[in-house]
Structures are given as structure tokens and as C-alpha cells.
Length: 232
Length: 381
Image (cartoon, rainbow over all chains, first blue to last red; front, side, top):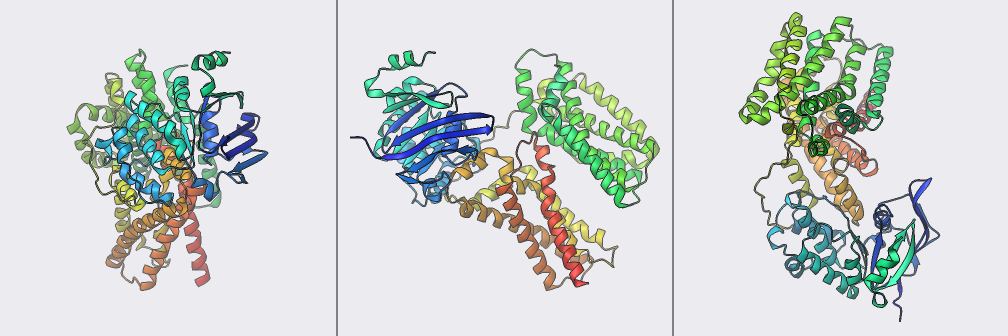
């Protein structure tokens, strides 16, 4: 049985300059408790879509926008508390340590401080929890935001290129986390690595020419068939 | 395209738009001040001193900033001609400094005071000299660390000594520029590029997550921000002396907006697009970010204005409880307006840290507060 709908976007247009929209006629349906992978060429609009859903961009129009079946806007207080985004590149809060940032983020989501010991161990991050973020390497900085994301358990988790910068073991651990996230909510993540998406997601969406042009159910399709279908 | 143009374009935009905008601003400012009929007697000594020190400070800020390293990184990755790269970088930075920053200062000076062509040329020469010597000294400092501290101690008295005798200024500036060019022709281009200094990481074990704590750390760990705040405290001690000469005008309150001009602290979001993105992506930030930020700015403003009031009381006397209340009100009002500006109108698309620090937006709040003071004084009358 299909899970109830979590997020539904219909006929959306997003632009930086009005004449050249990044997404046009874009529609997306995300069910509750599923893992969805988003794949597309560089410049296809994956990051733009993520940033729009996160409420950061204003230049968009759509026919309808539903969250848990009700109309909403990306900047609504209730929606903001139901989603968290991990950006592809993020050097924010340089003067917080990881534990301070986690406390700040949890308080922003009106949540008690979550127990992250398992996540910290899984990402092998024990040595860096009390170091300022400005002193962390790119990979370790990524882990800060990934641990926070999986600790907060939002209903909708947006991950933009989450694998970039991670070492092999952390990447494997991240795959496990994404696969297991269904028990908490829905995860939408973008990646250039087809295998990572095939390993972890229920569905794969292909973003091309501003729209979702192809959709695959991972259980029913092998990576080679998807790769073949993606060839121009 | 040659190296000079490549670097200049990265500093000023693809069509050198920063240069044209700044020159237009300087021209409008010149016309406005000249037409307004404001006339002051400014000694050439002050003009040369201001041209030199202002250009040195802007040039030094760009040389120490991350933007230059970002620009040079790609150029150093491919084979390059050492001398060509050094001169291209130094000339591009000098051109950027003089046309986008010092030109505005000159327009103010030349609009309000009488001048002749030789003073104008000498002021230009002082600006060029300041840029070239800054670059040469910067490269020398990178080579010999000891020289860096010596330069910092001797720099200002040296400049003052140089321009005491007005007739020798052009000759000294020319000689200094020639010396700087000579040194630059042997300098190593890699010294223009600097990696962040790796220090032993400090561990903070109290996991509070208070944004006020974050801001205190932001101030404490940025030397430039601390220096700027200390500079404002120094100005707070100096202003009562400057204002004591005018006994007819109630100048005390005019110092409040001037001393709240703490640019680096008022550009927290503008200075870090990543922080802005994250803050806007998190829920409830009006309360969790704006409130502590406003409190922090108010506290810093209050500290500086306290120094000002104490200095005024010692030098001029006559401070009333209403003045203290007024200072507190201005400190809070300035903080509130600055946070609102950052939240709704952050500065975007700046090319260098210097461009951010000297963005005209920073004058909006002091101008509004000055207008408020004038309005209140008119009402009193």
C-alpha cells in the first residue's frame, strides 16, 4: 500500500532571471517514510530545488503546494520545523563547536538535546566534538551537519550531495543511515553517484531540462538498466 | 587577456563596474558638497596624511584578506612569470584601492577646501606611493617576521615625519615608490598568497549553544574586529577634545552615532553568506539570532559610549543623567537598526573584505541617528 503523501509540488517554475527558468513545469510527489534519490547533470537544478524547498529562494511560482495534504508555503513556521537541510558546501557557524551547534539547532527546532553518541561513533567524530567548526576539515564539517540532521529526525530531510568530502567508512555509514531513515520520515537526497542512490533509495528521480523526466523504482530496476536509460 | 586585467576584473567585476560606480559616487559627492557651499580650511599636510594613511589601510586590508589568495590560487597553479605576476597583482590592487576607495576621500577634500593642481598631483602621488610601499612592505614582512612588528611601530611616525616638510613630499614619495618598485622586481610571487595559519585547536567543552557566546567568540578571535572596536574606544577619548572648541553647539550627542559605526560587527550576515544561508534555513531565528545579536551590539555600543561619556566628563564636565539615558537609547537604537538592516538588506556580491567594510550601507544608521539628533535639537529650540 502506498504511504500517505508528505510533500506535493505541482507545476513549479523557479528562476534566477525570469527569461531563463532553472525548473519549469516541475512536479514532485514525496510519500511519507520513503528515501528518494535525485540525480541529474551539473546545472540541472538539483541544488536550486533543494534551496527552494528549504525556503531560501523567493523566485518561484507553482500551481499547488501541499504538505501532509494541506496547502502551505516553504517559509511557514510549521513546515520549517518539519524539515532540515544539509547543504553541499557549508562553512557556517565557524565559532561554534559541534556540540554547541547541535544545542543551538535543537533549541531552534524546540527539541531537547538529542543523544548523538551512536552517530558520533558511526562517523568516527569523537575527537572533534569540542573543536571550533572553523578549524575542521571539509569532510569533518560535513559530518557536523549530517549528524545534526539525523539526530533531529525531521519529517523531511533534504541532503544536497551528502557524500561529497566524506571518507570511505563514513560514506558507508551514511548509506546505512539513509536506508534506515524511513522509520523517522522522508529523505530526499541528490547525488552524482548512481550506486549510492541505488543502494539507499526506494525511488530514483532524474532531473533534466527543468523537470523530472524519468522515475525508477529501485527494487525493480538494476543500476545497469538505470545507467543505460540515463545515456543520452 | 593579460594578468593585470584578469586580477582587476576579479576585484572590480567583469566590466570593471566597481570602478565606474565609485568614480560616479565620488563625482556626485564632489558636486553635492561643492554646490552646498561647505568650505573648510584644510592644510595640505592633512590631505597628504589622509591620502597616505587611508590608502595604506585599505591596501593592507586587501593584501591580508582571503580574496587575494583566492584570486592568486588559480594563477599560481599554472606556469607563470614571477615579475609579471607580482607587478600585475600590485598594480591591480593599487588601481582598485585608489579608484574605488581613496577617490571618494579625495572628492570630499577637494569639494570642501581650496586646492591647486600641484596639491592634487601630490595627493595622487601620495596615494600611489602608499599602495606601492604597502605591497613592498607586506612582501618584506612575509620574509622577515621581525620586520613586520617594527614596521607597525614605525609606520605612522615615519609617514608623519615624511610629510612634515611639504616641499619634500613629492620627492620623498617618488623616491619611496621607486624603492618599492625596485624591491617588487625581486620579490617572490608566492608570498602574496597566504595559507591560513594552523594553530593548535582550542577545545571548548561547555556545550551551551548560546548565540551570545558565539558572538563574543566572534569578536575575541578576530583581531581586526577587536582593533576596530579598540579604535572606536580611542576615538571616544579623543572626540571630547575635538568638540570642546565649539561651546555654542550641543555636540555631545553628535558623537553617539559616530561612535556606533562598528562596521565589522554590524556585517555579521553580510560577511558570511554561509552563515546567512544556515540562519535562514533554521526555524525560529528572529528570536534565537536577532535578539542576541541586538543585545550584543547594544552592549558593545554601550561600552564605547561609556568611555565617551567618562572622557567628556573628565575633559569638559557637565554630563547629566539625561545624557547617560540618551547614550543608552542611541546604543540600543543603533543596534536595533543595524540588526534590521542585516536581516532584511544584507550586503551581497562584495568582492573583497575591504569592499564590504567600505560599503555605503554602513552610513545609513549613523545618518538616520544624526538626523534624529538634529530633529530633537530643532524641537528644543
